[in-house]
Image 1 (tube, helix red, strand yellow):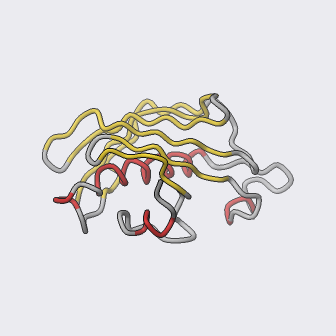
Image 2 (cartoon, helix red, strand yellow):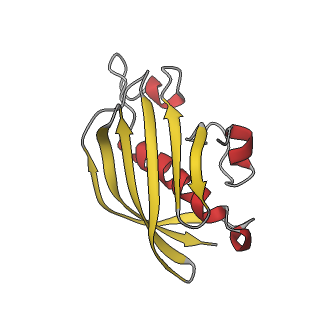
Length: 140
């Protein structure tokens, strides 16, 4: 299990944009499973939406991307690099994510060619799919 400080040793994101709280497991270059505790005090709930807070889909996608970045950037030859979005494909949002949810984030790297790769990403809450799709990344 990696805590926030250990996650920061692998990926460059910092608060308030560090979107994962802990990593349950990871296999360098292959996969990662992380969690985000969705707190009512999150900065984005002030405007999304007042009286009906819902985690923005784009931030769920970012949380998944950061989870995938743990897998990719934990490979020795990638230390000190950054994984940037190259694309989002087939992303579907199936369930609202709200304060109090524990968002499980799973990413498996399914393709790599040079500095470009694709991760299969699934976010769930209580075993129900909140979002799933493919994330393309570029290492720089």
